[in-house]
Every structure is written in structure tokens, then in C-alpha cells.
Image (cartoon, rainbow, N blue to C red):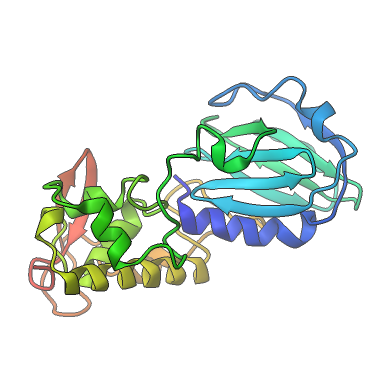
Length: 271
């Protein structure tokens, strides 16, 4: 599933192509996504100018003067910028055609993504209003983490993957962040010291910045707006490296299951 680094990489890739461009046409070949594409979406954005291309958590936000188009990539979605009207393939469900001759094509084999319209303040939308802070913003610091964790006994990996605590720290980046912070993934949230919370916040920011710089991670479907795979996983410390030597201490990387997800860690480096 595309996580925050993949969505941010996509946002940056489409930004200059879409900003200040006018929508000429919207072609919906299959609107049966996680939620149906609004039947009037074409009329809502046709002839309108895209004023901003933002992101909140894993949602892409295309801002118009009268509302916001919310795009989620779901489990297998991707967005490509095309300079020609190439024939649509089987899972190319939507084309957003611009007056500059380009088009934004949405590809989603599993159809678990979404294209939704919001004509109210975006922070009040039901999908966004209860989200935690952005991990790369100043709002996410050790104090904010402590306030969200409190005295909770839930494992710290599960907590930092909770979008009410902090958004966008998916499974890959949770394992990698905890390794960088030298914190064992099963530790109860309440057990972290002030110093460990500082380390963890810094590690989350460092990991996500590194992932964005690497174009994100590709496990199966993800490609960026130019069709390139993300290569963050080539240099991962623990994720996907069960039985391989730790890059720091040489101990073998272990795996356990948490919340039906695989967690990767080093028993020697993470306490």
C-alpha cells in the first residue's frame, strides 16, 4: 500500500504539471472504487483551475476555488502524468485531462482507492478531521507524542502506526524508525522515557525524509508519476531482512507478528 513517502513523492511529481492548469475533461471509465466516484464530478471540476496540490496523511488534495478533490491511492493505486492520449489499459480507471495538453491517469488494479469531492473546509471532512499530526511538521514532537501515548500499554509499534497518534507511519517505516531509535517494537508506549520519545520522533522524521529522497518503497504495485519504482528498500535496516545480519551489529534480524503485520527488528540493537 502506498504510504506517506509514496504519496508525497507522487504529490511532488504531479505538482508542476497540475498547478494553475485548467481541467478540460474528466474521463471515468470505472467509478466503482472504494467509494463510488461522484456522478457529477466532471461537471464540478470541468473548466476549473487547479490552485493547489497538497497532501494530508495519505490523501492527495487538489484545491479548486469552490472545493477540493480528495484522491487516495488505496492498496494498489498510482497516478501518472501523460503527455499523449495513450490507449487506456485494463486498470486505468480515470483520466483528468488538462488544458496544457497533459493528463493525469489513475491506475488501480484492486480499486480500493478513491476520488471524492469536498465543498466544505477540508479539515472538517469526515476522513480527515480526526487525524493526528503530520510527522514531518513542527506539530509532531516529543511532547505531542507523549500526549497521544499517555499511559497506554499498547506496543509502541502499534501506536506509531495509529493515524490518531501520528499520520503516515506505515508498517515499513514503523519498523525502520524503531530500529533507528533503538527501541524494541513490543515495548508498551507508557514505558518510553523522555529521551526515547525524543529519539523516536527524530527517527520517524529521518526515516520518512530518507524514504521520500529514495522515491518511496515498491513492494508490488507502486510507481511514481513517471513510472519509476521507489528504492528505499534497497538500504533498509530491518524491513524484509529476516535472517540477514544487522547492518550495525551483525546479529540476525528477527520477525514477529503484531496486529497481523510483520515486524522486523534486531534483538541486540533494540531494547
